[in-house]
Image 1 (cartoon, helix red, strand yellow):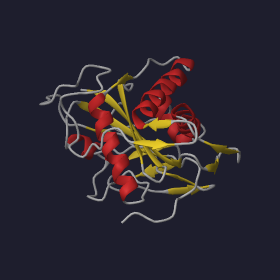
Image 2 (tube, rainbow, N blue to C red):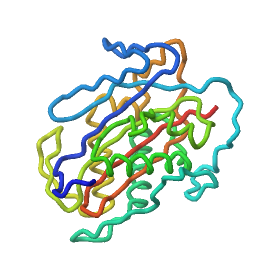
Image 3 (cartoon, rainbow, N blue to C red):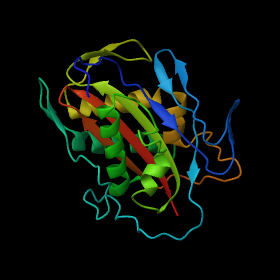
Length: 251
């Protein structure tokens, strides 16, 4: 059952990368397969980086056309577009998703990286996870069925060779304190919310690394650049917001 009181916080980011074939070294942190280590730093919950790989190169599901927001293959638990009426406008989750995608590509362009293509199937899987986190009041890469990000994707499709994830939570129409600078802000529009989410990710070393493909080491597997991204936003009736951004390297 959902909590009765509203959680008030700044966006809390988390990024996971997991390797299905061995352990990977990230800086001085060694992550063993099957173990997700959680770090608590200044009120921000972070999960270390990892990359999961798909064995082989044969796929049964083709990727959707880039930019298709209504793909043929979707997550059966995808809640679709959710909304919340703020003091300024009706905020649509779909508008936030596309703005986050746009802002992330702007950050990548500033660092000489190619733009991510929007993937509607990946976004559907992301959206379903955001709803799951909201319903269980838990910010986690592993869902209630003990599935990792890549396992959730593989339940739906199989065309990603490598997969990464950033997650966050925050609130609409409520004053929140940003973790990286302590400033108090209030998100009342889709654009403000998207900017706040991306700003928080870019001020976190692990999440910035996912967006900019920095220091992502796949151990015995060489990770190529991300090809696609999918953003899934879920907005609860109480104004709570959960965000999931997944990254995909095509087979």
